[in-house]
Structure formats: structure tokens, C-alpha cells
Length: 347
Image 1 (cartoon, rainbow, N blue to C red):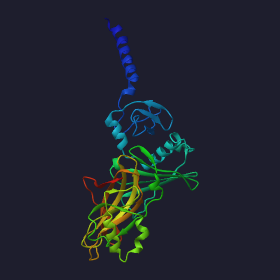
Image 2 (tube, rainbow, N blue to C red):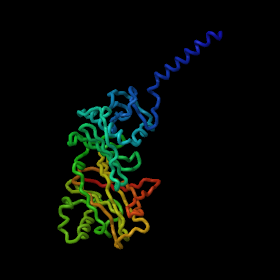
Image 3 (cartoon, helix red, strand yellow):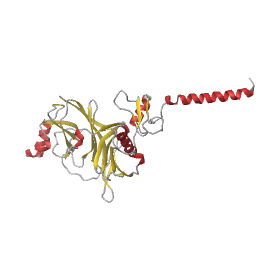
């Protein structure tokens, strides 16, 4: 074969190889943590999480293109677990309302958004962002936890009316269920539970909301003692259930507990997730010389029969004061996330 003939043949082989790569491009794995629309490259893609069509049937929420493909398990898991920036969550949620729920909302990428982080300075461990455009207001809140545990609480308002309220967790949108429509009133106490509640989660079953009969007891200690007697891990669907999260007994004051968020996840078992801040006094901080047991009482309501689990994601801080006497909260960094769990059954 002469050199003059070899050159065209080599060119044809290269072109043919390129065509082969283009033809099989759809079979190549997506970058870790990213799955995009094969038509326009949009990251606003969705698959029905929790169904047989998960990681098989896909739709681009932005352009409407649909395709079928099973991505490698690691790619799919990274896509579900990656942290999502609040502005992305805003657009992702509106695209979901527009494309999946068929609600009358505009393309979020055509709106002129203003706003951003609006977390109060004294709040630690939980972020809140608010975005506004025309008559739309989108509020997004999320705890500062590991990416795979981040639950975004989303509220979309139009002309001061709530259009949709729900959560986004690992790429699954969940509309707020009845227990979240009226957010539970949380009662905090520091002394009444001393000697009664160990550190952890306690399930309380009563005949009615325990806040309704609190005044019937002569002392606060009597009230908490009554609730202690009603703790259980197996209750009836006719019982009114409450949750007590306790830090356990401490020799002094200065130890606090603060519930940052609560979310109800429809899974099996059903998950009740709380994000809670625990603060300890730092060196030199003045505290009361008395036994304390920081705890919170969270009345929830009646539950349907089934299996449930309460998960409390803990973020710890140390309280000190600066030269001006202003409080300074120092996060306690750990290698492993602290999570308390308690399962219970409703018959």
C-alpha cells in the first residue's frame, strides 16, 4: 500500500471512530454527582423516587424532554446525595410545580429574582433564604448537616397566599402532610424533668393534647411526673402522641436545647425528623447552681397504625462571650454526625 492511499484510510478510521463514540455517548456514565438532560444539558432533571421507574424514566423539568436510562448506582446515589444550593432548590421546586404538578407558575429562569440569605444572626445550625420576583415569594430553610441528611423546607407564595408547601430530601419532593400544616407548639423546661427523663427521646401517649390540662396540676414537677408515667413505645391510634427530647440531668444551669426544624417523611417506617441545637456553657460563663434537665415537649396528635421512628439530628455549640459581652456560639466539630433515634408502634 502506498503512503498516498494510507492517509485517506486513516482519516476514515478516525471519522468512523468518532461516529461510534457519538452513537454510544448516551451509554457513558454521567459525572459523579451530576445527571443532566441529554437534550439541553439542564441539571433540573427528575425521576420518580421510590417507584419502579426510579433511575429509569427521566424527565427534564426545564424543557420537558423524557428519556429512559439506568445510570450506575454510584452516579445515581451521588446525584441524590449532593448538596443543592438554595437558589437551585428555588428553581428546581418551581420547575417541579410547573412540569409535574401542572400548576400555573412561570419558568423560574425568566424571573428577575432578588433576595437570598435571611438567617437571623442569633440562629446557628439552620439557614433560611427568601427569594422574591414579581408576585412570587419562595422561602427555603434547611439544617446545616451532612448533604445526604439535608431536608429543604420550601414554601411558595403568590400574592401573599401559599401556593405550595413541602420538602425536598434526596431529590424527592414531598408535599406537607397534615401534621405539618399546623406546626406543633413546642414547650421548653429546664427544671421540671430533673430525675425523671434520661437523655434521649421519649414517646408520650395521652387521651388529649397535654398542653390542654397542664394547669390541672399543682406543681410543674407533678405535670412532668404524669407525662413520665405515660411514656411508651406502643400506643393506640386513639391516643394523642407527644415527643419529649431531653438532655438528661446536669449539675448546673447554662445548658440549653433548641428545636430548629421538624419534618415528616412518608417512608417505612414513617420518619419524624428533628434538627436540634444543644449548647453548653463555656469556661468562665456564669451559670445557676441548680440541677437542670433541659427538655422540650412537642405535641403532635393522633397517628395511623404502623411503624414510626423519631430521629433527632444534633448540632452542638459552646457559649462564650466576647470583650463587649456579646454571646459567641462556637460549633463543636465532630467526625461523625450525632443522631438520636427512637422507634415506636401504633396499633
